Length: 489
Image 1 (cartoon, rainbow, N blue to C red):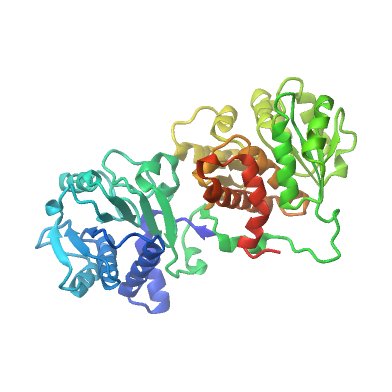
Image 2 (tube, one colour; image 1 turned 120 degrees about the vertical axis):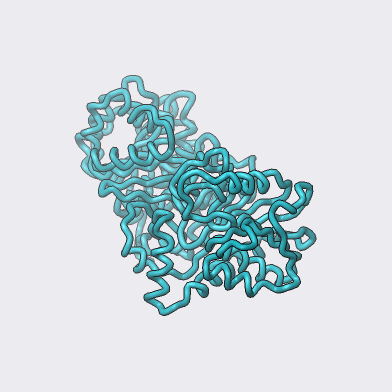
């Protein structure tokens, strides 16, 4: 997992890396520009449109100037729009890239760019070092970029956005943001969605060891992190090795939630799946998921199971006694979702009884029922951290870039997912996956990370195929494919 640093640490990170590797800072800037252009080319933008690059006098402008040169050399028509005066002093690396700019590239002042230009506009004006309010001229530049009608792509961070802040009015609204080395915290906040657009991350080769020199409790989960977290099985492994799990939930009219949870657990790889529901609903489950076993009434031997997930479609009336009994008689971590979380909110005395390292999976509404109303995602991030530490549980706050908070204070943002996952039943699917990984013998931490990552990846694959028509069942059907994408057998 890559550590997420504060924007103010970026210069220190770059300098430390260059010092350790005897690398000129200009070469690292060139590496970032090459990475951006590689991303840009893979997006297959048409060469029929001109590219305007708005550049500032600092290192973000230096990135933009290097990008302008590289894209010109690859056949695009490029115009550089300078957002600084002729006598301005540029950063050393920006000046070097200005000197290397081919004479054939048109160089103009940002004020001269026509608002009618239907082009691609790269925002390399202000970088991660922004502090305080924008000057009047900077506000004018931001407004100018926003008034243009073409595709806008932010280089590293949209101009006007603080690295750890929430966007105000004077921020470039990008369709894409391509950031370097690690995602800045602001790029992961839902309030900034309209400024950030689609997020791309370019690896510029700074190894994990250097990040250890900086303090941060925030991390970003990437695909390369996942394979080593998975358990290995062999040809003599049997269904018992893949876990015996129990899913508790479902009520008349909401039994579909348990169908989805059971199917997702099976597709994730759980060996034996049992579903505890109302007796009146058993035929539905046995017909829809013939691979699952069904029980009802009391749960006489919860210790038989390797993992238990509770909550989808359960209801909250007359459920407290059963939930309290599970907490008392099942000593391993459990997965709590949906109505199990609503029961905790209604009966706070139960929270202290949750088995340590259990996994709670609230969406924002369920989370606020537990902790109270919040004003911003930054406040929710802090409250999630405090909740996990206080009750020694793993809290999965669902949403874009789902946040996993651990009892030791670490918080990890997920990198997979799709807006097309905003559909009923997607959360029930995650519950089944998390319970399956726990049942397979994964540590609660690894179960949470793998479950969230694979869930998001399955959503991406389903979304690519079905777009806005994606439903939870589509996500489930893509779960097996996620293992192949990551090279996991």
